[in-house]
Length: 79
Picture 1 (tube, rainbow, N blue to C red):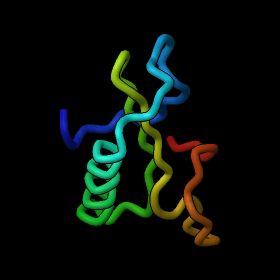
Picture 2 (tube, rainbow, N blue to C red; picture 1 turned 90 degrees about the horizontal axis):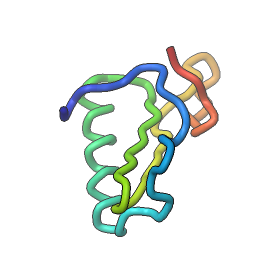
Picture 3 (cartoon, helix red, strand yellow; picture 1 turned 45 degrees about the horizontal axis):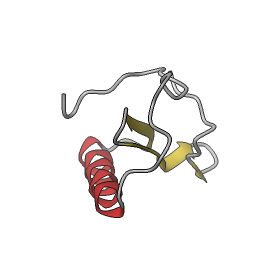
């Protein structure tokens, strides 16, 4: 559901599509994530979308370490 999050999820699901989504779909995902971060006043997020047969997309957004201000990366871990 939109607005829900799964905390602590990692890795690409088995059998997930490996090709990226079309550029317009990726842009829509970017906008959704950026808007959600701003609305939630969250410092950062790791987001992934895998739709078998359709595409995949991942993004590290915002700040990954609030103490240093370092940007989030896809290698970060959240609890």
